[in-house]
Image 1 (cartoon, rainbow, N blue to C red):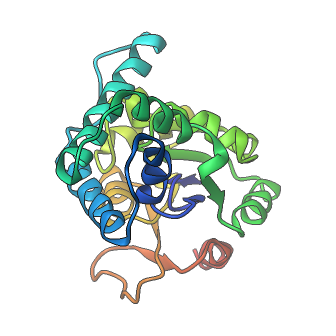
Image 2 (image 1 turned 45 degrees about the vertical axis):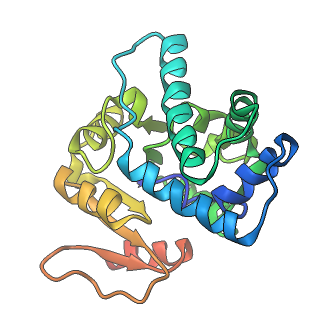
Image 3 (image 1 turned 180 degrees about the vertical axis):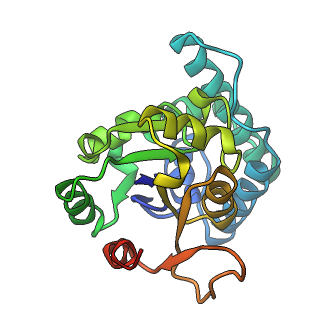
Length: 234
């Protein structure tokens, strides 16, 4: 049983703009509703336009350096759009570290009870995420790392969801066939279509009023508490 991480098991407290502007205030940036909206919009645009966070690096120190540079370019692109300010480099150092701890993340209320139930039933649990190596610290600080037998991230797997490769890397760690695995996530493009392409059974976690896509074996749940019902039906 694989899970996406951010957006599925835990959420950001507030929005990306909330966090960015909290740290930018000390550098003279004056928060406003309009600026918050502009930062969120700029972040979405920059994130979509950024290259995949996949790097030709095996050494852990080099890999983390590459991840940091990738995020520096992205955050710089955000404030290039909405207004640059003096001290940006120092600001980035602070905000990058802030996102690497559990301080700005919140575990979704039902996450722990569902994970406990699945472990009690004998499931091996894993994470498949496009997050970077900071995810390991976040999971520990949120108190949920010990539930997972494997954690597969894009920068270590050399691929990002929805590419089949990252799912294959995760599955191989459990020595199973893809058809023996379930993947739960909140993104249709990354989690559902990616899992289908790799041969896993997808479960789409979404609170939007959607219908199950025709001709695709996709189960839809509104909260993780519905997951046992889906598994029983299978």
